[in-house]
Amino acid sequence: MIRLSVNLNKIALLRNARGGKRPSVLDAATACIAAGCHGITVHPRPDARHITRQDVLDLAAMLPVEFNIEGYPSPEFLKLVRSVKPAQATLVPDPPDALTSSAGWKLTEGGDWLRDVLQSLRGEGIRTSLFMEPEPPQIERARELGADRIELYTGPYAEAFGTAEGESILRAHREAARFARSIGLGINAGHDLDLKNLPAYAKAIRGLQEVSIGHALICDALYMGLTRAVKAYLKALGSTPRTTRTKRSKLKR
Image 1 (cartoon, rainbow, N blue to C red):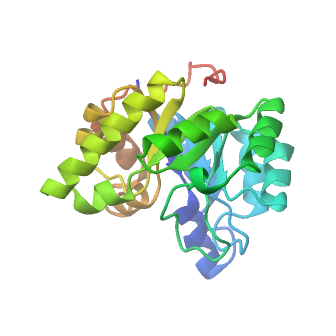
Image 2 (tube, helix red, strand yellow):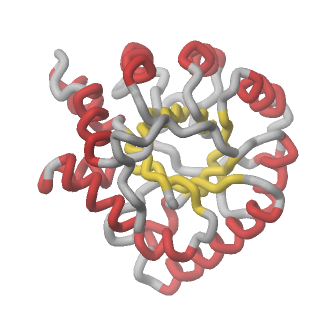
């Protein structure tokens, strides 16, 4: 089953635009969990323009589902991650002023320093994932450095969905996922996935374990409500909603 992790950055962005506590990130997380999502994702950035350090601490204290924290592995980010010990840390190569993630790691051009970072996080019991392009040499390097999973960057697929180029990109993702599985890496995916392009992606990518979706899901929630939006994305994935009787998932590679 493919797990749905809901990214709450846009909830925090809306709150910060006005100040105060509305909308509540914690209330949004509670609603998403009640609707059946399998995890919660946040991507705190250095300028705290949406998710703040306090949000991360508050979510870590209340979540009964897997917590995925994304970000560039700066000393400040790693200190925060180690303090809350989420189920998963997804490391991205974003510069500090990036509007959103727009490319995967280029590990064949360097990246040796990530080996110690990944080893340290795994030593804390945190599953690690690297944000990657569908390129086998880069994916092989991710495994050599010690990542548990990769998150395939789906932005180009989403942008080209419904075109011949989109089909070509999907084939590249399918082959990249096959290669990742063959060398023992778990597979996540994310960026610009929505109700239109998600079913085809979920069907094509064998072994896909988790998708992280925020922007599109929150946009849809403006029209259909958060509960209905989460349920719609679970249906698009062909996934079974998490029930309140399900115990917190154990860490899996």
